[in-house]
Image 1 (cartoon, helix red, strand yellow):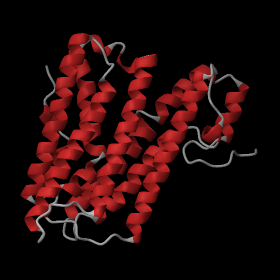
Image 2 (cartoon, rainbow, N blue to C red; image 1 turned 135 degrees about the horizontal axis):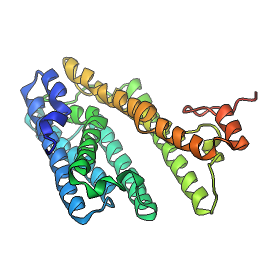
Image 3 (spheres, helix red, strand yellow; image 1 turned 90 degrees about the vertical axis):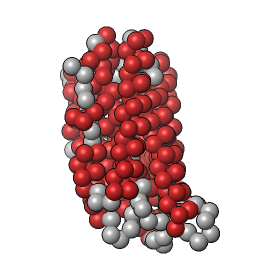
Length: 295
């Protein structure tokens, strides 16, 4: 049987927590856009028996959801501001731009890698439409929960008139640091592979962390969440609490489910008997970049 959106709908607990009917309606609309796009992507990919545009569809989903949420914020600003311009706040502009930049960069990187090397995740499932649908719906959950603080920030019924604070500046700097680490790690690994190297990378930022790209991903979302919460108004306590689902989801997913555990297992199977790998694994921080241990 097909997987119903109700069973996978990540906004059910979020919407229930949103006492504001306007916010709730806007979040439901964003979820409809999200899962509607995944369904269209699945239908096309299943018919063509390919996963080539899976990651590109993920990036497109982020863009369309953020742009739609920005329309919500403009509508709110236009209805409540005296100048009737509907301009977004500085906080809304920066936080939404951060998601657009991140998703465009990651989508292009993953799409390019998929075209060059394929994606082993889909080798068996792309010939099985019902199972393949599950992967697309999971991507929908990822697109919704990861950027949830930004969607909630842009969907409030009141304008974001809270002055920019030091915590906002720190939030944006943390996002920039995480984004930079992730980009540098991906670029270094791609260049290392392109040079014809075999085995595992242990140079550059990878000298200080076994999974620097995942650390950057965790840092950027945890940081951005702070500024998004600042822009949701003093009384939007339920919305602020729901926003914490984003960093919690990203950290749990990468650290305990599909990120670190899978790569650690694969690396040990390939290089577990290699003394160089054993030394690297024992001396190098798992996530947070740090100087290698000397003992």
